[in-house]
Image 1: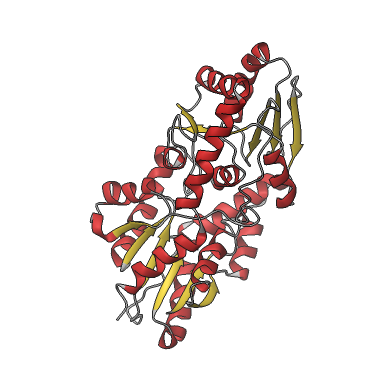
Image 2 (image 1 turned 90 degrees about the vertical axis):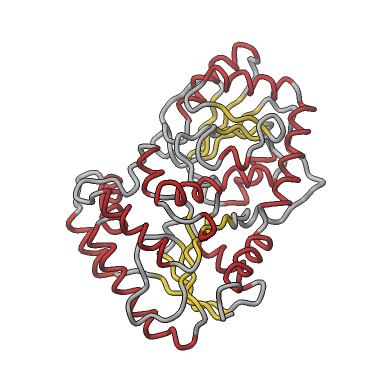
Length: 369
């Protein structure tokens, strides 16, 4: 199968390349088109100026990726590219819904890979696609057009699929959950290597603070320390973290994935009770290292974490329940290992890129003549 693979330039942490590689590995040919407009990004950089560098970057990125003019500019760019190259392709495979690549001159089918929707983002009170000057209704309408235009909408989670069906009134048979896989270096599975379940150590890996539930973890950790005085909380990720609580080891941002992988093996439990989570690759990373996971009851987390089997899920912000579950796992290394093993087996069954690539390929093959 010959595909035009459309994606943004790595705003999904390289996630889009994993989808493309999964298809390449089963024999599909992909011409990758990054839908990027340098002159427009430069314009967004100047127009979004703010004295604080980090805030400036955030303002620029939101305008460049989620403004109405961004959607229109990128749609025009993508359509021109598809019109030029479609003669040598069987279909379009697009990761994300930040533009519409289909014009009146496009004759090949579109398959759309989606991990989240604007309505879910609004429901979770996320800032993504929710800035002044970019009406929410515009994105909702454009997403619905894209979902109807696509030959098939392929979702990474059942959570996203249900939103597309229920919130956008799209026929259930038009939307298929194909999942996502665990990416390198975590895809090199070692069933014989085990974490340190007796370590009394908790690991958090995430880029956010309140959104990722780190505030809930810190509050729960105070209770945990009263019961288990030698408990340790390791925090990896947030760059604005400045709390120096007893027993908290703050490592900041670590870009070396192999070093982070080693950290998973040095801990007894992985915790990230997010308030907003389209997928949560870190849970798959933890599962690949046989760690039990604690997440929250929203979005895709209950799909990955089977409550009481591979870990626990809590209501967002429930620090009391979180503390109880952490204490249970730190006090029972055998239970932690049992849950970690169950998560590892679940990962092998559902979350490998070889499986995901085949699901996507099979869905597209049914619609390509």
